[in-house]
Length: 204
Image (cartoon, rainbow, N blue to C red):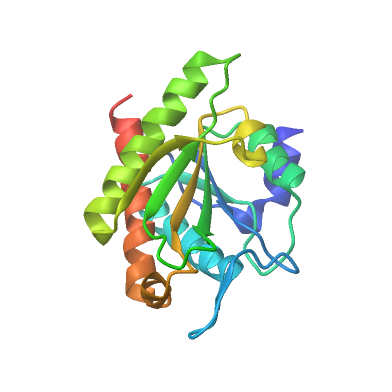
């Protein structure tokens, strides 16, 4: 069954990789736009996918086997995203999102992990991953840190491996929205996520 699933996922995979397997989940997609911002206009689903593809590239260069939950502007259910991670026996799950708030001054980067009370090892590993990724994000982007937080999001709650959800900035904040429209800034976010994942495995 696992071999069959991997065959189906071939377009989503990093080839010639020998390292651990990491699932990169680009949030939203298709009719699910996610957060949106105007002047200049941008959509979370597009930013998330662009960032996720860059993370895949950088992790692939480091030798990791990367599985993407989506590689195009398509709607993928939350349960399907979780199924992709669980049935392929992945080592880590990283979901990429961008934030929004009714308060236009809200800004910064935060990373969520799931407090799985029935699996303290998974919780500790997820918290460690979240901390390493956030540290690298703040170092590279110089953004404000909103901290590592517990989150009950479906994709990090129902996955079986250490899992985090990254909120890479606020589309609703005009200043951050301008930054997020800059491909060089998204590249820094992606590099930081890859750096954090790499540090996680090197410190195990």
